[in-house]
Image 1 (spheres, rainbow, N blue to C red):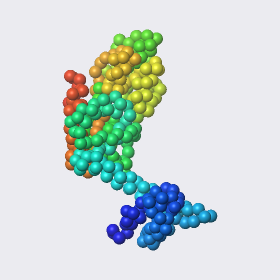
Image 2 (image 1 turned 120 degrees about the horizontal axis):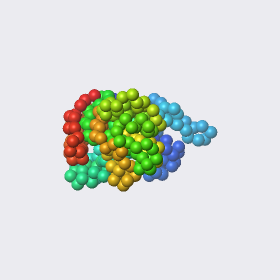
Image 3 (image 1 turned 135 degrees about the horizontal axis):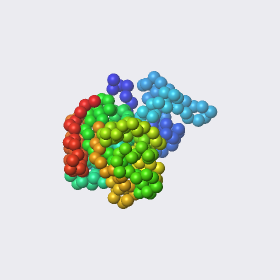
Length: 311
């Protein structure tokens, strides 16, 4: 099939022409003549059997096929450039890992620890991108991702790390303005801030506390734990969130725990990655480091971390 693939010089000429919508500007960027660029495009069209450009009122425009091909070629050239830069930066050693993560988890737990990983593995670069919802790792071309859940992301390997320890928090001002809280059942008099994607969390908490007969699903809803924490700081009610997301707020007095009772959820922040990455040495070093950090940050009574599971 290689005879169908245009040369690298032709692909660069095509991408530049599609970006500028001009053979002349593409030629100037690539230090070629306008006729040389035009000739390369003509040879590509002949080889592919498709028109990529056409002239409309003396203007160069992409055909529908050319538009689709330009987007694909631009992405492929970008990947080649990134791979080349990484190769040269590391002299063939180490490399980069592309990791997707929820912003709150990255800010509160991961990034403050990354310097230790960099010191231990100077040849591996961690590139972080934020994602808030599950997505296709292969399609989005990430090596791994952090996901809050309980092995509920299909076709991946999953390593539970941190975040099982949930705490009920509110602002000191909210606590002063509302009925006192001395036992879990007292929360029936309070506003419970709900997590849209995990609507059963309060119900699970009350069941663990031995409390029944409460409407655990009532209360304003927020899509992310970080939003719940901010809503609690803003005196809107009581939130149930992973302790690691609010440790700073508790230490600074912005939030308090009216009932400091341990509660461990079945969900946690997990490292998830496709089975095809199982033997990637960079990812394996990152995974082992994450496990050691998770164990070091766990409380003295935290349950042990589950082993790797395939879902």
